[in-house]
Image 1: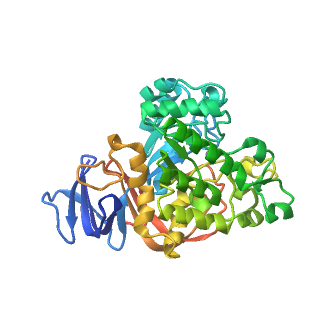
Image 2: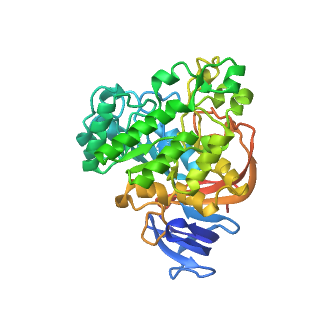
Image 3: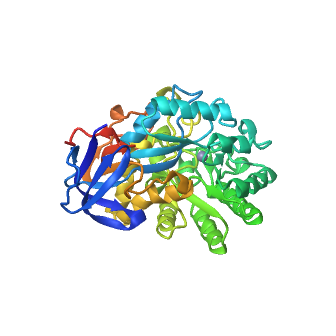
Length: 433
Ligand SMILES: [Zn+2]
């Protein structure tokens, strides 16, 4: 592979507090040289990617997505999902284990890793199940899963209803130093629920899911993390109450990290009125008040990272009547554009947004991966974007099999122009020379 010089961009690398004009040389799959201003590299034998007017940052890391393989290849495969991730600027994705069979044993994890290595466009890091078969009854063989190389444990799609089992999982996290990632939902309270509980659900005559369904399990998990000293990671935080609980727990020194999704940060329950089942997601889209709390949580580091919860479904599944349609939004390809809305509205700094997609998730992965930075010697995972470019979301352009987005037809400002994974250009917009 020839070396590649990314020339003339504005380099933003929040992990090193770097924001300046410069160029990057990529050789042998690594960042080999970083130059300031108009400096050129010592070795003159390279191809050039012109990043004039663009921002160059570490490749995005998404620690929560659903690639659907094995078992649900009609919705997505590792090949199509990672292709969509590359289009979205993601060079590393953590995939959830609610496949069929689920990732509760070494063989299935090995299958995902092997498929990703041969067919994937970007790095895939599997997450293992907390419970065997995701039934919530007994712990999976977590030791075997650690050996297989999982980056955390989750029964995502479902919570862990049994507090004793959650306690055991958190105790184990003290030894393996990996997060226990919970989808916080009190299933008795949310049962039958279709969307956020409030005036809109009442008006649409749809059963609601109250904020309390999330807050209750967040509170329980934080209490168990405090009891055990284990590491709880709260997936897709959607409520003001959860943000407050996590903030208090962090202040007390509880080992907790948390994520929010682009859709919970930018869309309200109103979308269900205008977009029907494509806005049906779990946890549900909430209210302006919740969004405000989530953004505040990002800004004061109560919420550590942004993760997409990319959840592709087939058109047949999503076009059923609302009550029968599954929960989930196909998120990779709109994530960055919609998040840039927060920056353009002055609600989030650009460097903060990039940090929440790069160095912060890298911290959760730990040192051994060495991702989320453009320091010389790091893996050459790079995302290049135009912060000002306006574009219209066209689901026909999606690489994902899942066209289920409530953003179809929306205008977004800010677009990924190229994605480089391990030194290889895995996505390049036509406009890039
Ligand atoms: Zn979930």
